[in-house]
Amino acid sequence: MAFLVFEGLDGSGKSTLIKNLTNHLSNQQLTVTVTREPGGTTVGEELREMLLKKQEQPPCAKTELLIYEAIRAQHVEYKIKPALQSGAWVLCDRFTASSVAFQSGGREISMEETQWLNHFATSGLQPDFTVLLDIRYKDAQARMGNANRAEKDRIESEGAAFHNRVRDSYLQQAEGQKNWLVLDATQSEQTLTQQLIEALTAQGFLD
Ligand code: TYD
Image 1 (cartoon, rainbow, N blue to C red):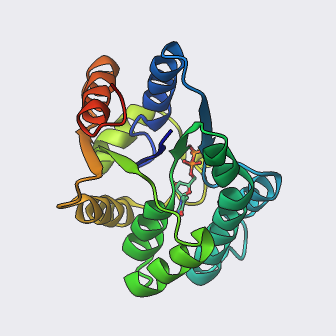
Image 2 (cartoon, helix red, strand yellow):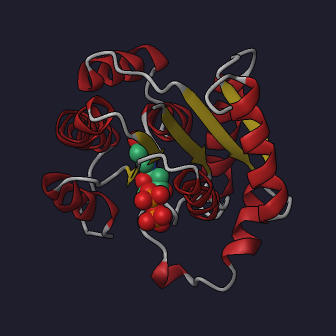
């Protein structure tokens, strides 16, 4: 059992890597719960709508952070903790590091406040291992293809400067951390899956 988190810019390929790892773990008869933030619970999905839709008076930076944290508290309480207690592997698309990257890095809310709120929302639950799919903003954009402006949600519609700060924050968070794996997201999905399985084996999560 392990709590694994996948982080990266939109378009970095998190969902594909999660799908491939899920297949690998299921083939080894391991129980896997796949979940994501923002979302993962009924309340969370409703709050997610509020966050991502474009509106005349959008949530200000503080409201945005508080909503992500409200979603997270609900998610930890009703989905992540019960799954871990049942002995499942939990693969989570985004977690606390997203708030540090987007609301602290991107929106420039202080790191101290963001980390305090992360701790409050999670009651201190931390991932066992975090995978960062690192990619330059312009490469992620190119990969998402022709998603035009109207199809992008409120956060995706932020410009290059915002997303460059998000990426820098991710890299800073990963620096020197033994339980983070930084992968070059421009590699093939087979290579990425293999690198991840090797890292999980080296860390003792898999035989
Ligand atoms: P996501 O569900 O990954 O988007 P999509 O449905 O397009 O795959 O996440 C939605 C957005 O929320 C994404 O741009 C990142 C942002 N986000 C934050 O800004 N802070 C957070 O704490 C989290 C969890 C996500």
